[in-house]
Image (cartoon, rainbow, N blue to C red):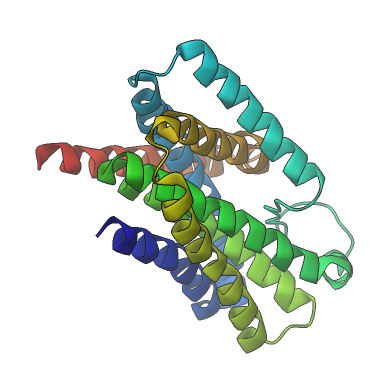
Length: 258
């Protein structure tokens, strides 16, 4: 049954984000992605710092070893992003960055395929993370899957815009994004069979999952929010970030009642 949950969660994680990206117009996507970045930041930080990390530190594993793992995880994801294999690019025309017109087309023309390769690797890692969380505790699996879906949506929306600007048709961009999303299912299934027998590793895998969420939130999402905005726009950012925190807290609260 756990394997079924893992496959379902990883499949939805890839499918939901791609369908949202494909179903909306470019103009709507450009506006929506800004709010989704704030929402995702709240969900990722709330999941990592309020739920997954505490669960890992409540285990029998030593705190020193877990903090070392957290540091190693942050450095690992930093190096992956340096190698352009862990892409989280959300830039698009009209996002407020002062690039020349057609900047996205130039960039995507050179790196459209590398975005898809990077996404596949990223989705595979997400699948392993979701599997480890479900194996540690079903409640954590659901919360972790929610966090993955939350940050997948703005990522896939951003990548969908990049691929469209690169000259992909909507159908072609949808197909390749969906194919990339299936890598999460592969990661989840492989994680179930490889990680399953090693129960002592679960706390460390939960810390690695947290390091992934923290890195994406702090190194990728928050810098996108740190720009000069009006008071109204800043309030909207804080509101969506707060909604993300409340959302993940409510989800966990529902599980504790049952």
